[in-house]
Image (cartoon, rainbow, N blue to C red; front, side, top):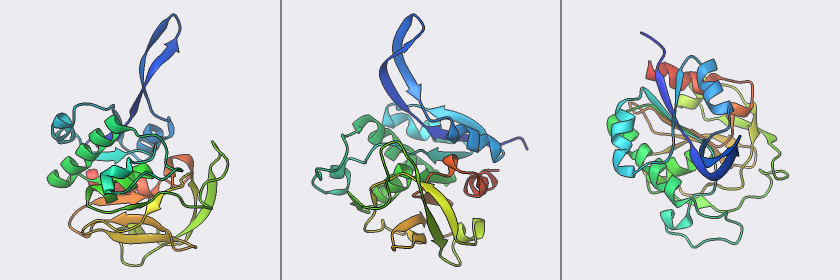
Length: 226
């Protein structure tokens, strides 16, 4: 078989200038598709669309990555907005939640990264901590911290030892969504990875593997999608 086709969610920015044109642009940090490619997959970018088309999009994929980005709208998990929560991204929330629901319904392997992990938790009825001190350094600067796997989990199969990961987040999982397991923790106890038990293949990681040198999490998705 050829390399699996992995969809990666993206976002739109209005009014980007490119040469003599000013246009809306589909944006995504290059690390995401490059990590997909480095791990052995083909990357397809998925800009926000009508959520009604999410199942059709997922049906054409072998695997799905829901990328990092802005804070999830607190109303999505029944909470009031904290002063430290970022502005809403309603179009992206709706599209990516629909992608996650379609992937779960179809059994398409799914990897959520940072915001993507948080959305996976919210999609299954979980809640989020809206601000967490100590996991985000200066704006635009990635920090590093250790993550320890929970033995016997799918994540532990991919990364069996404590590892140092690149992180950039101020929110985290609070109450786990229905059926989800915590599969890794930071030293302060923060949930750093979540997953659904077998036979499903759905994994979320709180850090940003696309900003590091360890492809094992993405490679596990590629293997599940092959």
